[in-house]
Image (cartoon, rainbow, N blue to C red; front, side, top):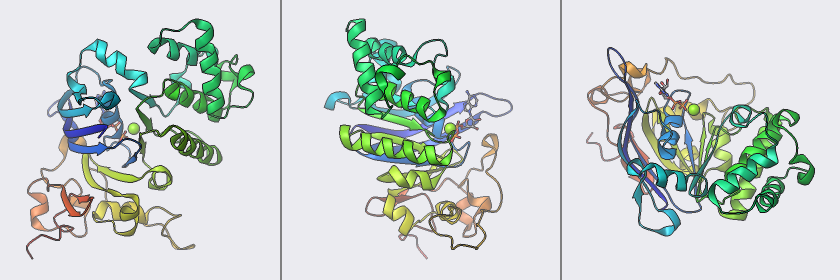
Length: 328
Ligand code: ADP
Ligand code: MG
C-alpha cells in the first residue's frame, strides 16, 4: 500500500457552527494504481488532496490519519510530519497538478527554468544539468521542440501547453504519488482528451500511482482503475470502475451516472438530473447527507451517518438500502 487514508475529517471554523468539509473519509491506493475521486463541486475533493499535500490553511482542524509509505518503507502519518520532512516529500514523494496552470506558473520566468527549479529543489545538481532534465521532462509531456519552447514564458503558450508544463514539473522528480486535481477542467474538450491521453501514457511509461480528481464521472472513467464517489464531505461509494458503471449501489452514484450523457443516455432522451441540492456544509443532517434527495430513503437513513459497508468484494457503499445484509 502506498497511501492509506483513515477517518479523515476536515473542519473550518465558523459561526454559529463550523463547516465540516470532510467527514470520516477513508480509502487507499496501491502502487501503480489510479484512483478516481469524483463528486460535484464543494464535496470536499480538493481539501482532501490539500490535506495529503499538507497545504491546508492553519485554521483547518484535521482529524484521522494519512499514511504514506515512501520508497516502500514503513508508513508515516503525513499529518504528523515536521516541516522539513514535508518539504522532502513534496515533489519527489508526492506532487500535484492543479486545475488552473496560469495561476500556478510564474509569469516572469521561462517555463524551462521553472521546471529546472523544481529539479534543483529536490536534487543537488548544477544549473546546466537541471536545465537538461527540464527539457527532457518537457519532451516527455510531448511539447514539440522542447529545447526552444523551454525559453518561452507562460503567456506565450496555449492553455493545453501550459498544463503540459505543469505536468512536466509534477513528474520531473519521478514522484511516487501524483495528485491531479481537475487537471482538465479549465481546458476545452479536444485539449482535455489530449491531456487525458498524456496522463494515461505517462502512467504506462513510469508506472505512476495517481489520485485523479474530477467532478466529471465521464472524465474519471477514462483514467481510473477504481472510483471513489464523494457527496457533501462523505465518501458514499468506492469500487472498481467496471462495478461503478455496471452495478452502482449508492443512489447518488446512480444519479451521477444518469447524468453522464455519453455513457447511458440514448440520443434524444433528456438528461436526468437529481432533484434537490447539496445541503450546505454548515448544516449537513446527522444522517446520510443524500437522504433529503433520495428516492429510496428509509427512516434509519436520517438517524446517523450509515457505515461504509463492503457489499461485494472490493465494492463499498455507504447506504443501508444497498447493503444486502440489511434485515428486511
Ligand atoms: P471540491 O474540490 O469538491 O469542489 P473543496 O474541497 O474545494 O470542494 O471544498 C469543500 C468545502 O470546503 C467547500 O464548502 C468549501 O467552501 C470549503 N472550504 C475549502 N477551503 C476552505 C477554507 N480555506 N476555508 C473555509 N472553507 C473552505
Ligand atoms: Mg476542487
